[in-house]
Image 1 (cartoon, helix red, strand yellow):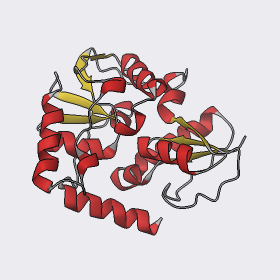
Image 2 (tube, rainbow, N blue to C red):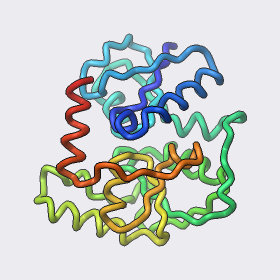
Image 3 (cartoon, helix red, strand yellow):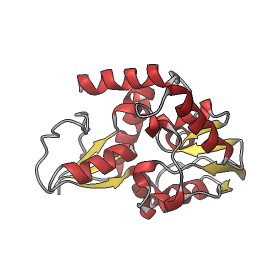
Image 4 (spheres, rainbow, N blue to C red):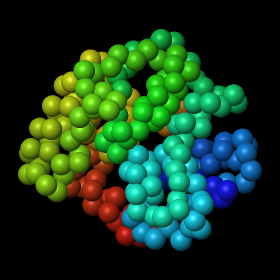
Length: 217
């Protein structure tokens, strides 16, 4: 089976060096896995039977639903079973988890994220609405609700989080949790012992930035 690693547009905008670090790790673990940088919204030009390893929940859903013969697995599922990844030790820090909308029905992803956090010695305190019952961070309302109401939704979801620090596995969720008043901790940063950068976070500016990247890739 052909396998490709698709870091996703948002991670390539956010910290392309971490995408490269993940690719290098994958290629230590198994056979040569090429990087796939065509945005999932465009024809991927992949052979049927190809498996996409992804970091973006939106990519995972679109590859599965839009392109016949393409299967997916999240990077989180692979890392959760790894015997060689250099997991950092966060010494029992407590964090909440916000589950990304495209994974709403994907318990395999929810389980993998929490296994990774356990392997990093992070204690999870769940919000009331979590896993298959998780509510949106607010970003999915962008373009359908007025901007002020989008931010209200971000604040509403952030307020559901029991902990000040909130683990996310979608770059747009970083922006939403920040706007909502929490401290987002992006799973890729946690895995490599880095702080999470907020970067561009105003919804209009962020969506323009990501759309420009999508159009170019």
